[in-house]
Structures are given as C-alpha cells and as structure tokens.
Length: 308
Length: 308
Image (cartoon, rainbow over all chains, first blue to last red; front, side, top):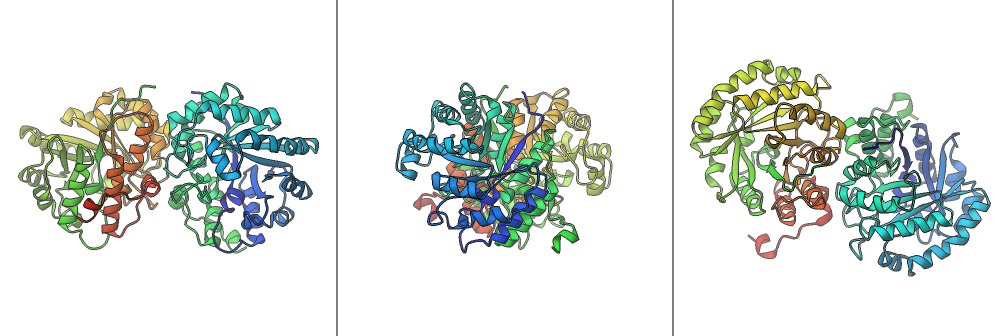
C-alpha cells in the first residue's frame, strides 16, 4: 500500500456535469456562479467549459461568456475541453490556460462516436496539441472506456496503456483514465493501472470513474492503494455518459472527499462547502442530488451565503 | 491481500429491510413471496423475521405467519431476530433454526436504545443464548455502531473486540459487525477488523455495512482484502437505521454481488434474479430502488415469472 499524502481533485461539474443536461440551456450566470462557488471551496482544478460546436453540445454554447464571467482565483486551474483546432482557438481567445482532448481505448467506441480509428483520432489531435503547447497551454488527455465499452465489452489493458503513452508522447502532461460506463470493479481497475504504469508514470495519471454500478469509490480506493493522486469527480454527481444505461454517471466529489478524509489524505477542499454548493446547483437545476454524503450531511449554507 | 474464494451473503431485506418501513403494515403474503423469491436466487442465508413485540415493531408483528408461510428450500438458513426469551419462544414455536441477538459497541447507543449498559445487555442475553443452544438453535450476534455512534462519535476498536469476544464466549457462532450509521471509511474498517481478529477468528466474523455515506462497497473491499467471507446486505438497499440522518441505509445486495463477481469471488447467487426481485419488491412497496446495479441492469424478469 502506498497511499498518496495529497490528492488533487479535478472538478467536472461545470463541464462534464452540465453538458448533457436535458431541457433548456442553463443560464450563463448559473454556470459562472457554480464555478465561483466551487473555487471558493478550495478546489484548485475546475473543468469550466467545452469549446465545442453548440450544434453538438448546446449546453456548452456559451463557453466564452462563462470564461469571461468567472472570477479567476489565483492558484486555480480553469480548464476547458477543445475537441479540434477551432475549439482551441476559442479557448485561447477566452484565456484558457489548459485544454483537454478526448480519446478512447475502444476501437468500437471511437468508430461509433467520431467515425474513425483510434490512430486516426490521435493524428487529428497532433496539430492541436502542438499548437496549444506552442502557446504555452497545457493539454490534458482523456482516455475513455478504460474498464469496458458499451459496444465491445471488455477492454485490453494493453490497449489503454498504448493510447495513454501515445497521448503523452504527443505532449499531454496528464492522462485521465475514464471508466465511461462505470462497469469496472477494483481488481480490474488495478490491473488496468498496472498495465498503464508500465509505460506512463503514475504521477501523470488520473482516475475518472463513473458510479453507474455503484463501484466508483471501491475502484478509487483500489487505485489509491496503487498511488493514484489525481481524481476526477463531479459535485452532486452531476452528469455522466449518455451511453451508460443507468441513471448515475460521475462519482460525486462529496463522496470522494469523504473517502479521502477518512484515509487521512489531504485535498485542501472544504467538504461542507462542496456539499452546500451541490445542494445549491441541484436546486437551481431541479435535479436529484447524486451524492450520498450530501444527502447525509445536509445543506449547511451559512445564512449570509444562502441569501446571496 | 487474501481475498476469500467464496462469500456467504446474509440477506437482510425481509427483516432489517422492512422493519422500519413507514405506512401500513406490509401484507404477510408479500413478505412470504419476497422470501421465496430471494431463496430462488441462490441466496442461502435469509433473515426472515423478527420475533419482537408488535408494539415496538408493527411491521414484524406477523413473524410466525411469515415463517409458517414460506417454502423452506433445503440448504437455506432462515434466521430471525429474537431480542428476548419471549421472542425466542416464538421463534422456536415457528421452527426457526437460527436466531440473532443485538448488541452495540457504544455505551451511549446502548443506554439511549435499551436504557442499560453494554455489560447489562449482554447479561440479559445470556439465558436466551443458553436456552437457544440447548434446543439446537444457532445464535448469531450483531454488534452495532462498530465504526461510529450517533451519540458518542468515534468508537474504540478495542471496545468492538471486547463485545464481539463476549458474544462468542456466550455461545454465538458468528458476529456481524455493523456500521450502523454508515460513517466508516476503509482504513477505519480495516483497523477495527484488525482489533477484533486479535480475539475472534475472521471465519466467525461478518461485515454489516451501511451505505449512508456511499462508502459501503469501498469498506467491504477493504475488509475482503483482510479475508472477511460473510457479508450482510439488503436487496434493493431496503431499510436502514432510523438513527442515520441520510436517506440510504443497508448496502444493496445487487451492488455487493456485482463487486464480488468482479473480484472473482463465488457466492452461488444469480445477480439478475436478485435484481429482478429488487424491482418486484420496490414496485410492491412503491419505493425507490436503492441499488445502482439494479438501476443500470434493469428489470429482466422472464414473462412467466412476471405474470405470476
């Protein structure tokens, strides 16, 4: 066992959490306030927006306005998804200091989603990553379907390792390993990580696990034992993958923080403040709060903040 | 790591799951059908009833009728809670082959609940356990609040060990360690178990963890690493502790089975059959299904069974 002393949480609610929200487009001010509330909790890495065509993701159509509206807190990274060069240009114009690109470990998933092979998808990212880096912008790589694919089922850990290494070689500083459909279990997660760490150091890896089958915290505990020190999560468990059949997607930040607190691992984040933020945003959206910790701890927003 | 090859699930839904159900008393036929459906899934240990005064627990007032109504499947243990000698008599008359008694690791919890000290509560159980054993009836001991108490907070693992050993010395064949309010986290669970296994062999211990803070599967994974081979859980996550503030209580059997399946641990239980049973009982009760696996897998009850 080699638990990390500190874990960095990469907060997904404003982007991964809201991008598939059904119904009318969420007001820019709500997104801005969510991000500001999240940065006030002590979170130091927030994925704030996606510079993708609003034709594809209407909820993210105001990415530039969101980035312009937020109060940038010193020491906090506000990253954004940039699926192509046009998205990168928008992100740069909006003053984003970190972008993320998306790949997958499953050929079937990549074909169905973007109609090309994994190798072709990586080729397309090459000029984007080069351009970003030449402008001093860090690039984070997501690899999805690392523990299972809705189309091809099991995924060979060696394939996850290969895509991860390719993205590092292309210039990504960190790889976020996504259990997109949440079908993973702890030993599977460990074996996958063991394969990836043969070619990418664990200090460059993050766990992005979904809770669709309720396994996310057990899986996180298993990879924490292996030394993973970066975890993606979403306040109130907002969002998830539209390809997964179940109701829940992203693991809730509150539940992850409670786990880490119990393990004596420092995050610098105020759990109750995140709980309060989760209650606030789910009320704004008229949505169920997907965090069990939030339900158990309740909303303790101080009066002054609640009346803002 | 020393994962067990096999795990025995002790199914809690008919007793711990239903005992606090609000609203009208659930019909005896529903309880009987639930137990019969559960035994058909391959579960070999079902806590079927509680022989407690209906004044205190109205939902369990028909314990004798339930025990008389079920189809007893060979190889399945149908146990019942027996809080006192009168309960034991009822259980014996109903042909119960195993009873369970309830203690706690917290003095404050014991005082608030039954208005005596832990030592006094154990003294009261002594004649009950002796009587049961003289009739050839096995006795299982529950120790609650092993990872935290709603009144006194943290619990000394040595205290859990002491009560567990006392119950073994009094004649219990197995001790079920209950995280009654679900506040435990994996290292806490491991440390507690390490203290208890100094005085009781792990083969005589079971984990009874609640999912109030979403930590149950992570905690179970941690104690499975220590070799725990008996797990209490409740189909559809039914029930829980009225003392816990959150909405959810018992960890869902479906979610535990999915975890165990992923770890290659055999239970002899048909996961889809439990999922179907969980959907059936939650429909009967008009209740939310608390299992994420059940939500993700959906109801696949065969037509012939569904139309029964």
